[in-house]
Length: 320
Image (cartoon, rainbow, N blue to C red; front, side, top):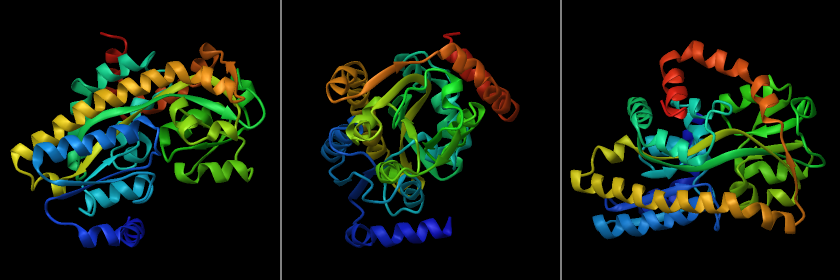
């Protein structure tokens, strides 16, 4: 953690040096065109209008990768980050359970669960670790892309060198499938794919397209193996010093910008396949029943560690 903090300090000196009490840095790793980027810009405008503070929008991992941004938020160097479920799970392990394989059948079900009691439980856990979850934006249902082939069955993915986010859940899923997963920061992924370090990767279509990963890995198998959220996180150092009025500004901005972000995510999920086919992508259907059966051991593992939360998630996802 100390090494990470020093790295963050090195990359954020310019921002930190200019920062005043009424300046807010909103950082994330997405590029222009990604719904997260669009929503962050909207958040900045909404919060500035409501609070009177100035917001610096810092996209495209300019403030470090997701883990570094979380470290920097907890240290009070930046104030807000629209982050990743995988990186967040290194600090708040419970949040990784949202990525249990084939837990959510669609995006609307996932959003309903996150906006309910499960989201409140995860926020309580995060606050104990120095972070405040303002809300959950979307990071989509995830699929596998490969340099040269489809992977319609678990047998096809066996031995595949696949990049994952820094997320124990994703690693566990692909280990159960017999692949060779390895975590890597998203910002480093295109270069790693081009150099042949990996055979492929897994991400929602929105992330694959906005980062041009489909140009490197043009075979996409619609595995829909897991869901990931985008937790919008504030450092408790900053949050605890805000007036109740400004806290409400931040929560309202997160909810309103999040509505837009989710709408854009759903729209892109529906429209991107046709656009990507025109750009040379070959889509492959997956035997999801076979994939689900092959990853059942992941449920057994995490149910042993977090029995109450796993049960609550399964019940909520089933609409019970």
